[in-house]
Image (cartoon, rainbow, N blue to C red; front, side):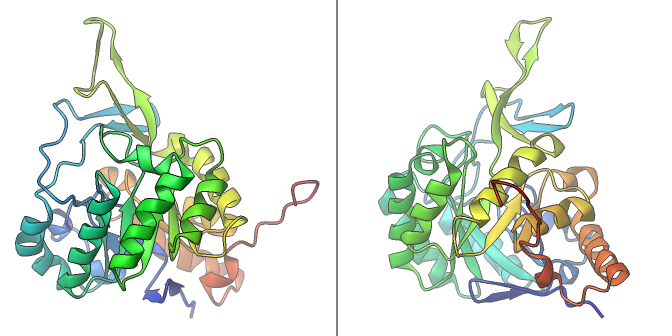
Length: 308
């Protein structure tokens, strides 16, 4: 038997594969398609203090190796989330991480306190890295001091584990990771999407209503892998890998590079059961190689030469 359980910031996940924020909404849409008990966990779509209408359509477009999205953090706000969505999520037989985003440091603190008060939340993920909003979002994550301020405010407002979700749009992601770790982050997740654009040549107009959007999927995997590896070597807190993971092999590459767990998003649009298939693929890989616990593979990448 292979032990797939992983422990992150005091929370034990049944396996290292979680549904990524923004790709499974609040779980209801997938409830008829997957067995949540076979997931490591679910990260909710981002919640803000007040309702957000999001960006104008079109909001998504397929790319050669993934997709662009420009949703703009559309959500009902924390009050409606607590009444309408949380009862369903709380009853799921898997770990639930609530993703939050504030426009100001004070909003991060207020949201953290209100999520804490829900009861039953395993951890919260701070979206300080969304590229599709004009206020907050990537503006926090691209500056170490601003990122630390947001994380610190949330940390002081909650007893729950705090996971900081980092943007790839920085000169040195390790510097930001160290800053949020010092501010009290219990883990970091990375990467959020890369800024991209699609053009309608015939009309000579942007395809997306928001002009630019977040690029996700296999296209960003090499960038994400490199940043996870670099970050894992720079901090002591657990790292959660995100970006282009569509198979067990992809997930294992992130784990070997230093990720304690992974999040899967874009792949679920192609195959809703992708997370479950990836978890089972990880189990099969370990069984075939005599690995008794997936945790023993974390950070086991062998690097020779001057960068070792």
